[in-house]
Amino acid sequence: MLIGLLLPALAFAAKPDREVQAPWAKLSKLVKGKDAEVKTTSGTSIFGTIRRVTADALELDQHRQVPRAEVRSLRLDERHGHWRLGGTLIGLFGGLAILGPTTGRDKSGDAPAAALFVPWGMALVGYFVGREIDKQALLIEVIP
Image (cartoon, rainbow, N blue to C red; front, top):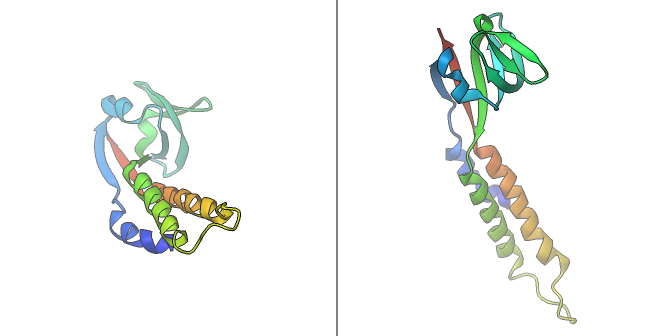
């Protein structure tokens, strides 16, 4: 049911990758502290968190460095938050709509466990679906 509710969102919400060109001097503002995939001129990919951009190299976590002359491009995965909220609300209200009219209280006056757990479980699934929709890649081509 939740997937059916979120399919229209998946159909038109996927964002294309953003591509920008940036000189080495402005690279620090764009990438410092972010997880990235660094493409080198030899065609290899290096994954890591960018700690610092110096005049001579790109410093990654675990004391790794990529010399400036070898850096061709970077890919950063960004997330924005509006679909996470939307997916959570769709899941929560979808779960309540499904269970609301069908579940009643038992003779002791307590609500069944499904009435408590199913809407919150669907809200959690909606959050993770929305989180995937929120992904967008930023491709940075380093120009001299």
